[in-house]
Image (cartoon, rainbow, N blue to C red; front, side, top):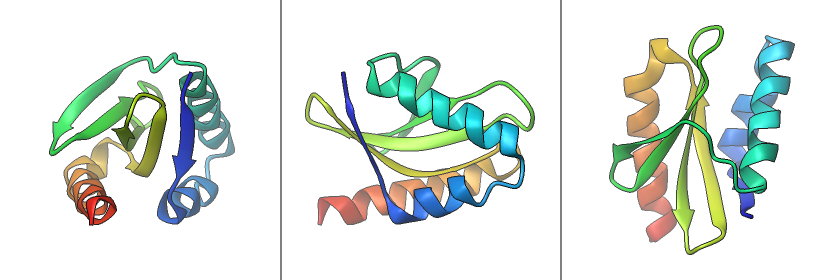
Amino acid sequence: MYIIKQLDDFKIWLDGLRDNKARIRLARRLDKAERGLLGDVKSVGEGVMEMREHFGSGWRMYYVQQGDVLIVMLGGGDKSTQQQDIKIAQQRAKYLED
């Protein structure tokens, strides 16, 4: 079981998705993560992890894990903006450390 905390930037991104089906599906993925079912995840460096969803544009959600139970959602995007999204997530993760 995990506690999922969403940064305001992450909430704005998720709530702003125009594709309602994608937004619902990504929200369900977060519900599963709360239950400990992280699914397809991968490290992208500097302590940041990527939750990967293989539908539509190839959705990605970026997070860091703090301790054993807290996951902080940093941002998201799709395959087309992946490299930029990773850099932003890494910057946000550094900000959390300060």
